[in-house]
Length: 400
Ligand SMILES: Cc1ncc(COP(=O)(O)O)c(C=O)c1O
Image (cartoon, rainbow, N blue to C red; front, side):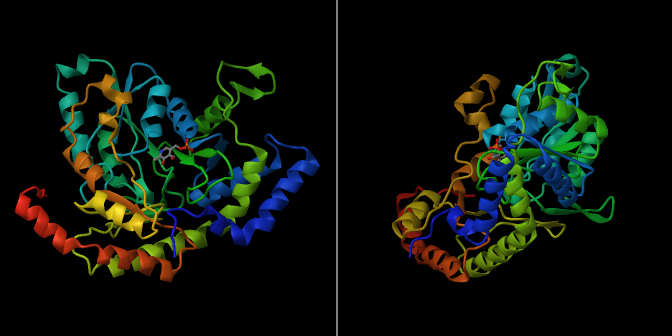
């Protein structure tokens, strides 16, 4: 039995009729941009995220850019994020006119390490450095793989240094974080000034095309995002500034409404599947399973394990018909696109190590226990032992 890394056809099987109905309705009404579907989806998604506002936009990249711009980030500003994310996180910062800067991650959660954030800011705000531009203005923590970042700590550091926090929730629709400060569970996307979500097809909530949303509790930020996505207008042909066409299509909004109804069940199924993987992989000490702190409920957009023998394991799984993915093989500071930032290799040791060892296994709500067992068995059948011995004899094994 072959198990693809991602099987969207299987996900759509049960809701195909409802999705086709959305297409039919759009054709019948000949309404393709804006309209009731977008307005209703925005209400429903805001409710789901427990925020006052959600504004549909054309992608997660645009959502992050609009969220940054509407919150006051622009040229001359520096915005801090992590190097182990999809390039769009940093691109959105650059596209808003600011400069992206990276801080290293936590070894267990793979999310921003608040201590490293604080270290960086402390150095940055020494009396001599404070005259330098660009000036730190914001932080973009990424809830990577659907695992919430340590928001209490990040928000506290940001408060002390007067930085705005924009969450990259592109992989975390519906994840929960228990705020000690507020003594309650909070949804990802509801904790910063604003957040960007992606509805790229493979996401936990995916469109049948491109899409994204900004969530916020700030009325003014919501108003600005609505203008940024629509040529700087609030009323047709009355433009307050030049901007962009970054709207969410009517058809995509309709599709997202169908899928949103299923999202709580799908997220729960992902959590169950993650739990089963972790249970089965306990018998395999060479593999590090994802770590979920007690004050979080991750939604497992990805289930990423870690091993020193990543490349060979990936090949072994592929030979056994099992698809895997790398998220992400090269940290952003080492990408050609960011050589201009002059961030040296070696500057982010945790992110650099993790990039060499991380491997995403098949993960989806509809994945059966049988499929998960096949993947876990294939991992256990990998010749770990022979491998270790061979590496020891030629002295090339890497220590942690
Ligand atoms: C962490 C992260 N940020 C931003 C994005 C950008 O979203 P989109 O592809 O919808 O532009 C993605 C999507 O892949 C992502 O995973």
